[in-house]
Length: 331
Image (cartoon, rainbow, N blue to C red; front, top):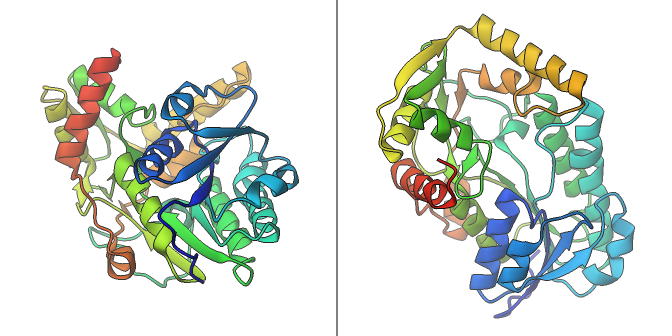
C-alpha cells in the first residue's frame, strides 16, 4: 500500500520529546513535512517548540481520543515506548497493547501508513560477526524484546487497512542520549568496561540515521515490511570502548567484568531500584540482552527497497556525539 506522495505530508509523531523522536521531528521538519507531535502535560516541549512543531496534548493510554487529529494525517511514526519498566507487564502494556491500540485508531482514521520504530531486541541475537539471517523466527531474550515483538504483531494486525512499516534499529547513540552517554563518561575517566573478554559482537547506529530511515519509510509501498538498520560496521565491545575513547581524547583501559559479576550487578541494581521506587537503566532484563554473543544486523533490505544507506560510521558519529556532550557540559 502506497501513500499518495506529496511535497508536504502531515505526519503524526509519538515520542517526539524523547531521544530518537526528537531527531525524527528535526528530519521531518527539514524535509518540509508538517509534524504533529503527541505530548503529555508533563513533557518538556522546549525543543519541539523551538522547531515550530505542532503539539497535541494526549496520552498513549487513551488513543481513541486522538481519532479526530489522526484523520488529518497521512502517516503515523510511532517512536514512543519504554526500554525499562517497573514490571514486565508494564512493558507489554505500553510497547505491546498500547502500540496496537494506536494502530487501530490510526486505521479507523484513514491513515495511509503506520511506521513503528521497534528494536533488534524483538528479533533476538545472532551468532558471530555476520548479521542474523533474515526470515528466521524471532527469538527475543528479554521482556523488552518480547514486548516490542508483541507491538509489531499488534501493528501488523491492521495491515489490511493501512500500510505498515517496521524499523528495527540496534543500540542507538547520538546527541541528547543518556544511555550510551555512560560509555562516553567512563571513557573520559579512562575506563572501558567490557563483559568478559570484550569479544561479543554488536551493531550500532547514530540517531540521525535512524531518523533518516524513518523519513525514507514515508516512501514505502509494502503492506508489512520489516527493516533493520545499522551503520554498516561490525564491532566488538573492545572496539566500541576504544572508538568512544578516541572521540573523547582518551585511551581507556579495558576493564574485563566476569559474567557472573555482571549478572550479580544487574540483580543488585534491580533490587536497589525497587527499594527506592526507581527504575534502573541496568537490570536483569538488560543483562539478558548484553550477555548474548552477538547483536549484529544489516541494512540490505531497506537499501534495496528504499535506497537508504547510513551516513555516519561509529568513528565520525562518536566524534560528533562527544562534541555535543562537551558543548552541553556533560563531559
